[in-house]
Amino acid sequence: MVRQSYTIATLGSHSALQILKGAHDEGFNTLLITTPNRIHFYEQFPFIKKIISVPNFFDYKIIENKIKDKKTFLIPHGSFNAYLSVEGNKKIKIPYFGNKQVLEWETDRQKQRNWLKEADINLPRQFADVEDIYYPVIVKSYGAAGGKGYFYAKNRKDFENKMKKFGTDQFVIQEYIIGNTFYIHYFYSPLTKKLEIMSMDRRYESNVDSLGRIPLTGQEGLKIEPSYVVVGNSPLSLRESLLPEAFAMGERVVATSQKIMKGGGLYGPFCLETVITPDQKFYSIEISCRIVAGTNLFLNGSPYSWLIYDEPMSTGRRIAREIKQAINQNKLSMIID
Ligand code: ATP
Image (cartoon, rainbow, N blue to C red; front, side):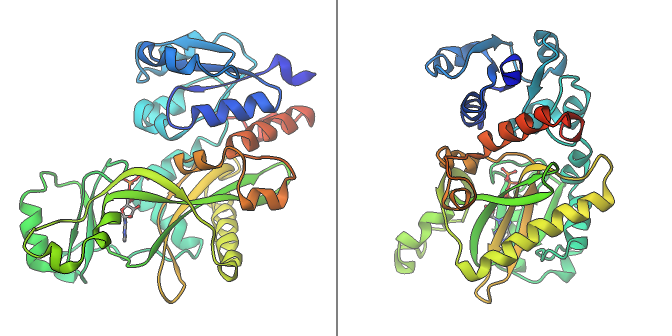
């Protein structure tokens, strides 16, 4: 078996368990790179065949130097941008699943908006000038993650009061879309040229998702402010009449990326983070161009992956399957950067 001489590796956090379980199920060797304090935890999982210790995740060179085997594929996940930065991701020489050109389009907020706009995706309005704001808004500091560092303002007075305490001049002011959040997990295969919807989740955010549990009369006078800190995820299915548009949005995003980016555009797993309004329109608040943590709910697959695969198919396993097919078809250069 050709695959057994290949290894799939990732960093020990975020969705590493899902990625390595999927790699193991597809017949690959598995390797985890992690910090000493997490080794004991990850040793509990027999599908992780080798664990390498690094002092931290910030230095791409240390990681690179630890992996000598050229037949190793590195699978990026949400922690890669957070720890290694875009530069670290670009410089690392280990074969990397995904197109690194996408990183710039994803991390530059304006470029990301241009991409999604060109793909005909509805976006919340953004306001450059305080005089132009329509309320309510959400104010987002740059570089925030997991919903930390955001505030909600219902009107100008509220906005001005909160700005005084905000402590950064690097932020965007965005129309607050009132609706239901749906995070749609896609996978695009350059080998089959097909898009798949793998699964969907919503984030469970503290405290905004709990405010409805206390009646307004009980909140009055308490000065509770909504915050958006992710504390969990829950699975969702989408009303079926909305599924064709969810699928079409993913296809448009991929097709546009192929026009505007080098290296074949966006492929592999990605996620459109959307809010659906009562008139059943999707608004995208962000795109993540790799496996997202919400897919961890679906280690055994989801109702959507079950429609395509008669076997459990997580996003982690789908990545390994793509690599396996690329090896078998001699097309690794199409999926490795
Ligand atoms: P990450 O980088 O971890 O994906 P983030 O910190 O960039 O997260 P977002 O995904 O942009 O955060 O937003 C966090 C949460 O804030 C969303 O899940 C949603 O509840 C809320 N939110 C963000 N933008 C809007 C918006 N324009 N309208 C309504 N709610 C929003």
